[in-house]
Picture 1 (cartoon, helix red, strand yellow):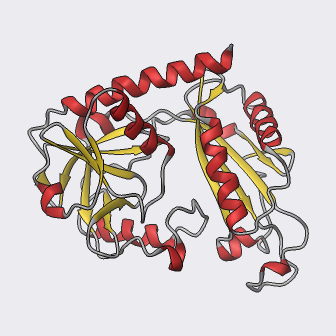
Picture 2 (cartoon, rainbow, N blue to C red):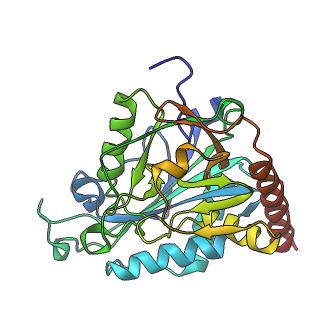
Length: 309
């Protein structure tokens, strides 16, 4: 790998993160003292759900959409959150206040089935209630993510069928994506471009994936990928602003010859893709992505203003 290696979550170093307070089940701990049991079902089995959110001027962007996904995922796996949305908001507010955070903040909200009485798989062994952890960091994407872009490699690891492990779950069980990331790294790229079970372009190991061809925005059908909040906002913005957008099957053939390609995610919003499998994407000009970025920033401002009022 070269010195220009990126990940989609590269952030500027911020010394304040050395002293952050982390929320665990209602209490706050210095990051060096924040611990969960080795018997916790999240550590032992990856049995849990999480959300990534960003704080803009004191407002958690698209909080309701994130909670729709979070509570829906927890219900689907019979994981009792232990509080309602207002309780989650209270925990987020408490943690942000303890850290003096108001903007340029990324949060990882994690809920597991809790501590087990024996080190085995069965969910009934988690009897003490869920474990809720909130990690917040001062976090701004590095400028080079947008100037240099991400290098992707298509990888053999796929996002599977819903009846194996549904990719729509934002679960702690991320080994599938970790393997894809390792495969990409070993191929000399930054991250992995994953296909669906039928061989169509799907998603990366960390973000949703879009291409632009002749002014049209394409993304996967959504059947085999995390249905990202930012992904949906981009689709909605395209529809509302007369940018042709399609959720469809397409192959690497169309991806290689795209005019633009970009990733979406809560952390980086929209991140350009520079190359796929060593093939440069387009000319380096990204007018459609730039327009979407502008529209998305305005949407964030509107969302913040709505909830500040």
